[in-house]
Image (tube, rainbow, N blue to C red; front, side, top):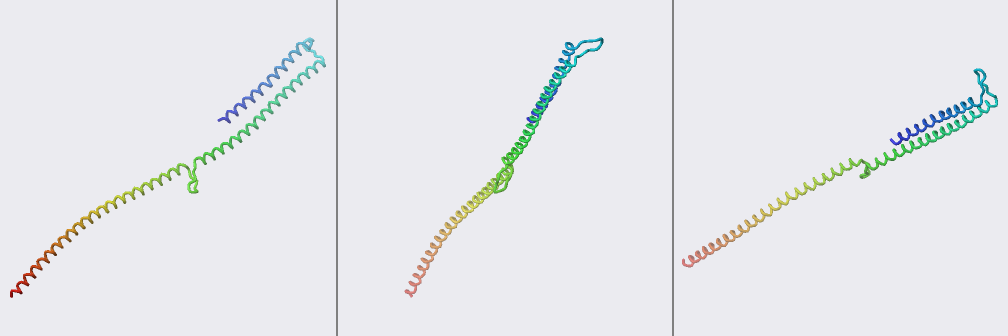
Length: 198
C-alpha cells in the first residue's frame, strides 16, 4: 500500500515538472518574441523588417532560454531517474522485509517439540491430547484403586466374619470336647464303680 502511494506521488511530481517546464519556456520565448516583434522590428508594406544583428541577438536569447530549459528538463529527468532508482531500492528492501517477516511469522507460529518443527495449533492439539490421555489414565487407575479398595475391604470383613465363626466353632468344639470328656469320665467312673461292686 505504501509502495503504491509512493509510486503515485513520484509519477505525479514527474508529470507536473514536465508539464510546467515546456509551458514556462513557451511563455518566456513567446514574451521575448512579442517584445522583439513590437520593439525591434520595423514595418514595410505588409512585411516586417529585421536587422540581422538584432535577429542574431534574439536567436541567441532564444537559444539561451532553450539551453536553460533543457538543463532544467535534464535535471528533472535526472531527479526522476534518481527517484526511480530509489523506488527500485525501496521495492527491493520491501520485498526483503516481507520475506524476513514471513520467515519470522513462520518461526513464531511454529514450535520445536522433540526435534520436530510443528505449528502452534498442532502442538496445542498434541499437548491437549497427551493431557487428556494422562487424565484418562489417572482416572482409570483411581477407579481401579477404588474397586480394589472395596474388594479388599469386603475381603477383610469376610475374613473377620470367618475368624469370628472359626473362633465360635472352636469354642463350641472345646465345649463339646469338654462335655464329651466329662461324659466319658463319668461313664468310666460309673463303669469302674460297677466293676468294683461286682
